[in-house]
Image (cartoon, rainbow, N blue to C red; front, top):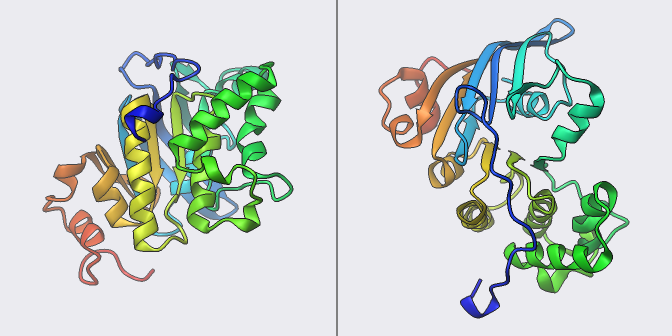
Length: 271
């Protein structure tokens, strides 16, 4: 965004509340199974506030399930999910619903409503969860659409825009409530390398401006290298590595090295 296009953000981010350990979100000793399939197997992670944490791991190891636990859509079989200093399964559903408003979520396919144009898709959370006037909503939505480079596409239907544009529209919608935590469920899924890189640029730019706590689930190692402050690597429902991104990509651990290098030789096999 050029300097002469800069607008004042309609409202200011609330400073994230951290728990006693200084983390805005954490999961501890998380167990979850679906029938006989054990997905979470004692998983623990503390997410650094105002940083981008990338969650990596083989398919079926629980990355997207972790996000659903964080936002309170799935209840663990055992273990705790702490957000903004509260165990979200130790509070009433009404309070949990209020906490969810402090999250933004970008789903794999953007999850846009096909019957609404881009503008109305992005405005939807504000209309549903706030009492803002339409002029206030327009100010916020226009700002967020400009931020992701979609101000010229606001009247287009989802079937009239590309996959990359759908992702950016979903990102704009995830941001309109000024969330303190933004969850990305494979934002690069289905995108070619160039559009993936462009989307990553948008994520980095907006994070630099908003300084929220971002959690990115991805299979794409290039995405992890480009956007991560921290990397969490999950295998068989447990965390096998968590730490600064630069240390992850120089790790001598056999599993970490194999997965991040995409090597066929190592402890990770086809099963």
